[in-house]
Length: 272
Image (cartoon, rainbow, N blue to C red; front, side):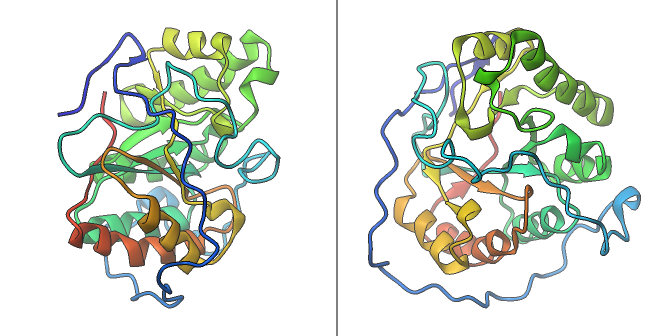
């Protein structure tokens, strides 16, 4: 069983070990044309018909500065990077959404394989697509806080940090009826003041142990290979359903998720 979260503090075992270095030669080729997505949960009425909707993009987007990627911010002892487990539980997470196209695609894949995940949403995006927050929650996934506009929290004064986190928590509470218990800082960049505010707002900070590097746009097969190569029990996996064009992330998930299941891994949501 997972450890509990109490008073906004992570009581899971934090793994500060850096992710493995990518090998120059990938062990296996990954297909670039995964199986077509099967039918899954339909989009909610208030975000249906968004085929021509514009890209809703956080500024700055993950991958746009040197703060992105493994080791973007030094590990902090109060942040969870892996979660304690006696089984082959893993924790798939998706940042920077919700997105009118990519988030429903990811939800359909997860639904088809009866897998759970955690979605760290941007307030600016969530306010445009509240129905997607309900879709995420209705499918049994966790909706968590990824700030309002994706800033570097350590660069902000305390009042601005409180606004970034608090405004997003209030929106999630208005839509879902409960405030989020988890938060992820953009770029994984926490400092003591921002962590204190996160805790005061009743949230526990979550990092990641495996960066799928989907934000670099390396191709679906490379994203899938990265996840498969580095996966281990208890690992928190970072991917993105928003913040840009994420079809590679969707295609990669289509390929690697059933293979993780075949290997005995169980993708579950992060819970307080």
